[in-house]
Image 1: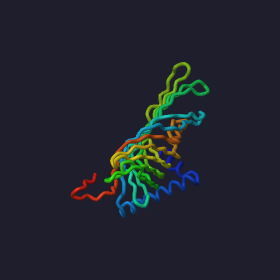
Image 2: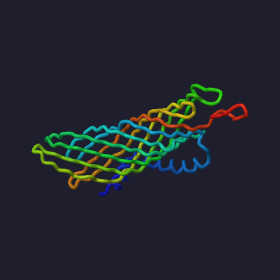
Image 3: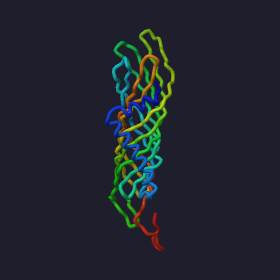
Image 4: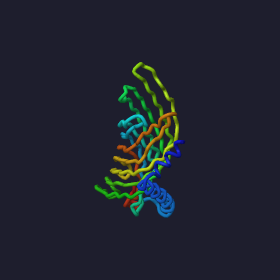
Length: 244
């Protein structure tokens, strides 16, 4: 059974997952119409980095907790006047874990998955400190559903007590990303933005080893980000006033 089929099967397995998946699909279709009907009031772009958390399990092994790193390039995070938020980003998540099982067998697991994803939700920002020309400091946040598609790279090695090594080699596959994220950010001088983000996923990465199946559950991640912000300003340019 290929990885793409298993990814779809996992997403659609269970009532809550089905509802979440179809809400995201419908929201993306709706956002295409909405984004063409109005111009964004604010737009942010950022680079983020942080930690990813999950677990690894096989048919013949108990679950092992894993911690990795996550990197993000937010190409566009747009906020509209009606509080709608639309985003698109590239996400790079990496896990590496080494452990001994109950039988003394050493396992080395390395995983990397690169996702492209879209998000839709609601957000709001408010000015904290304002000058004559524009907002000096603005605080805001958003809550969004996310959905995307990714390419998976997996490598696994086993070594027994005698030092004999079994290297399964690199495996490649596909993955569907579904979840939601919460972002909190601060804008400075209507030009820069910094913030934190937590994302929660219902996402399992499947890898087949001839006789057993490996499953890496990517559960959540925390991230810090920094970038640029472009938004509407409360300023009308005149002969004597220059708006930034």
